[in-house]
Amino acid sequence: MPIALRLCSRRMSIELRHLRCFLAIAEESSLTRAAARLHLTQPAVSRTLAALERHLGIRLVDRSTHHLALTAEGLAFRDRAAAALATFDAAVDPAGLRRRPCASGTPGRRSARTPLPCSGAGSGSTPTPRSNSSASTTAPPGSPAARSTPPCSGARWTRPAW
Image (tube, rainbow, N blue to C red; front, side, top):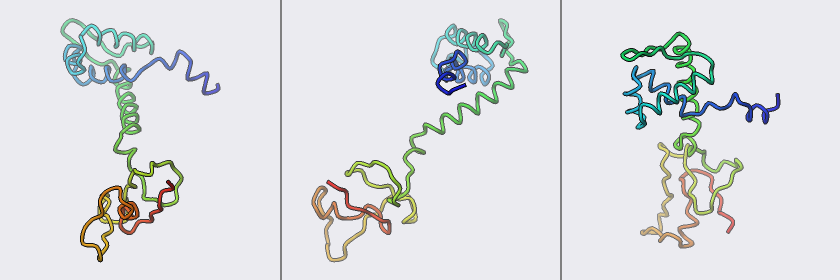
């Protein structure tokens, strides 16, 4: 089946909120505590769980007035849902997206005013400007001298094409 058809099929109607809600219920063992943790109302959490169970066609939770426990299917789904959410969260983590090597010839668009991160030139990941021994002061930002100073010591730097 082509990917376009799979993405638009009814099988793709589970959202991250369903997984987050189910995991909160599994961890809290209570719809009320899960609702408080998610900053939702208890009926909204109950409806979300019911929609997830209806979509999957299985019962994930055995619940009564004073009792809530995961079924065998619920335990198996909990592990898969946790793995899926962890993978998604890692994929959209801004800290992970910002890690890029210094200008090493890899293609990519960067703004001319955005400094290149330094990931291997120094001891840390913070860029260290190269100092000029003949100049006793730092050039003011925006001046030609400041623009010609490489952002990382020891890293290859190319002048932006303005």
